[in-house]
Image 1 (cartoon, one colour):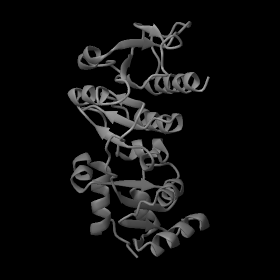
Image 2 (tube, one colour):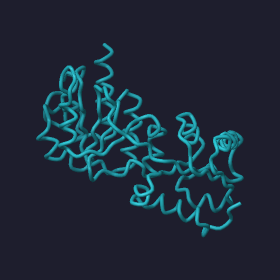
Image 3 (tube, rainbow, N blue to C red):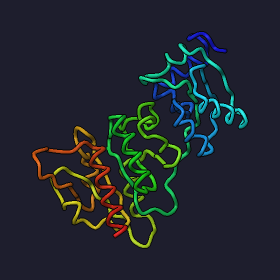
Image 4 (spheres, helix red, strand yellow):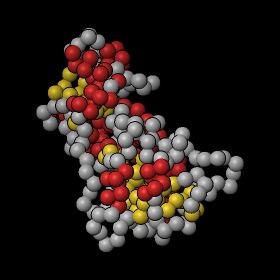
Amino acid sequence: MITSSQNPKIKRIRGLLENRKERQQEKVFIIEGVRLAEEALKSGSQPELVLYSAELSIRGRNLVDQFLEMGCLIEEVDAGVLRSLSDTETPQGILAVLPQPGSVLPPAWDLLLVLDRIRDPGNLGTMLRSAIAAGVQAVVLTPASVDAFAPKVVRAAMGAHFRLPILTLDWPEIVAACKQDRPQPAALLVADSASGKPCWQADLRQPLVLVIGSEADGPQPAAMDAADSMLHIPMPGKAESLNAAAAAAILLYEVVRQRNT
């Protein structure tokens, strides 16, 4: 049993939790809690290390047994030490280190979500969760976005990381993806708080790339330059704008509505 917070495994995990560069260098990320451990197991993703404590539920202990059968390295950890790694209010007694999935654009797609310089981890995680629910085939982040594998993003996404390609591309690469060989080029539609067509009037049945800009600044100039058109969500009330995650969910489900009508 690991009983010291100075144990090399504990110190390594703390570094991975706190440092984006370390996660990128090792190409791993951390999941915490029974639900995410279940999602990892369902996806077939094999943790390189699983830590658990005596606080773990029977449901969680069944997961530990299954990870053990897969050949994963399992370590029991003092409950206080494991809690020290958690920033949730109710730690569940299980944490795992997993490889970051390699992600490429799928060979055939008709709906991509581009998140342009999204910096809030909770918003990004929520948008990933909405994307997987709405049938998005891949999510693209632009440089200067928050790390998709940051702990708060992973928690908010509730398992989307195991089922959704997540890439980082710059704008020339995004434009090239829109123009790749297909029956018709994908339209690049940029959400804006006021300009462009109301989303109810835009054609969202066609292959498309939907762009959501940053919470504070909106889409960057490169996104506006690349756009085939702009669209907005009508707001009859007095709000100036919507939260980025709320806007993404509304627009994605307008895509779903149109494509299923």
